[in-house]
Length: 357
Image (cartoon, rainbow, N blue to C red; front, side, top):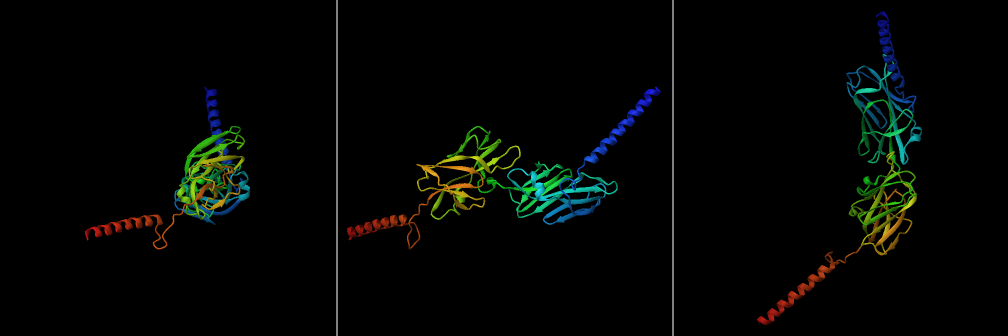
């Protein structure tokens, strides 16, 4: 019995040792982001359990509600060199801001990685727009999209944060997301496998995608906007006939793909297309620019090679301008028709007058 008792005591001691080791190991692996890519401490505040606090640095604000921590902590806002953080950014993205936290319990000098309540991060910056992405940054510098999208209103991005186990980066796509820039409707979608030619088609628009267009699998979306919305900025004498754009996404990274290894070919068939139709690039702001390569037009079908998704496209045909009266400004044909009708009425009354008298 004595032997078994001592074994049980030893097992309990070993269990306690393992628990302590696990706790120590966890504390040791809690990331100190001053050592993991965010070396600059831009501001530190002391946060007590019962008081709210705010950190403001440039265009960033961190709002810490009362009750976020059970003990008093030193809360530091960190920043890393953007160029260094951006070394691992996803293809097609451009990082313009980054930050991390270091929260320390001064009594035990241990890192605090989880919060009782979320703190609120806010960034107001001219670069923030509907396409802006909010990334988690691991201690090794790897990017991953935060599973909860940031809230974006105008040029302000906000996000709730309840732990300090990653850093963060904010980035804009170098490729515009045209669902946010005039082409909101996804007409058709196809998954493209490298080495396999395919096509996507809808509403008289067919996009032929060669097998060597992409080196990794992508999701290829054919987009369209309300054609009338492109009238206001259309060149003089031109009327929009149809429009389209692309959104190409790498499903592994979520990044937009802007350039193709081989051009796709768009073929558009529309009864309003003719030999005088024109093919225009449309910027994210809706401005027209003549594409430097003239389209091929055969009957009512226009075709054009496309090697990038940096702009959208509008096809126009010469506008038909109806003649108007210089006096009234009204369409001339109805006036002429009305005049003929009045003449007939006058003849009728003249005839009636002759008969009566």
